[in-house]
Image (tube, rainbow, N blue to C red; front, side, top):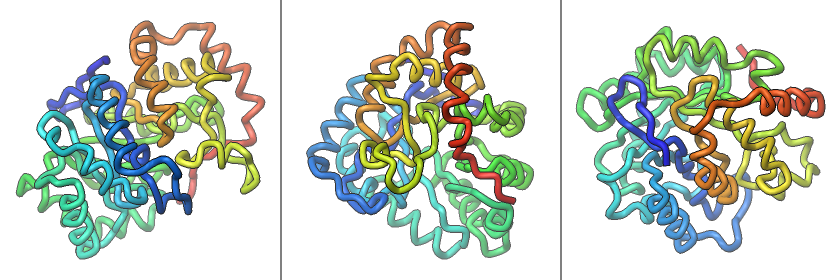
Length: 303
């Protein structure tokens, strides 16, 4: 496993992160995942730990992931970087949520706590209101309950506004080959994050395209993913190229989709992804594939 400096936080983290959705067994995207449960989560987490993964990320909105992951990580808390999130924008709601998250994850602090899923200007402004979640996050950071404050976003405008309003430590954003090649999506927020020396996590780096409606067979094939990922067997070369592309944009760590197959693929190919830089041939492979999915962009651009 490769380990990278995580911006100005002083942390060194694994180049592949464990997304808590992998541990989910029910109540996520209206699915119950047969075969998954506490025993499966224990196995997945043990594999991650044995493979050298040190960064674990979860959120209250990921079904029962906090409960399952928290149990699986018992005895390993001091060995890892644990990141959690809130998508509440109000002080009181977020206070209740962070307390519940710590209880489920069997911890008294979070290394990274993130304002989750910013997707518009209005909700970003709500988070910074006098009774908003940011008041709580500042209190939690002063008390040591959270070590570092971060944001996750799908809207570049919302992310940039948040960075103007507060000196966040970390950023989780969709640094994706398709979105970046087609529209330069992510370039502006990456520049802003790098100028602040933030820890930068890339999500959706293994995604090929958006799901094509409710009947898209890929939706049931990959139910723990928000979008259609590359097939790790049939599209291995494209998947490697896409992950290297995300790395080339400047991310410190990649978070695979919630499917265990993609997490295993990322771990098994970490040396290649974080070894040599992306080649001209790999860039050409992605360029050639872009016309097939250009109409399936999944970025959010709302104000």
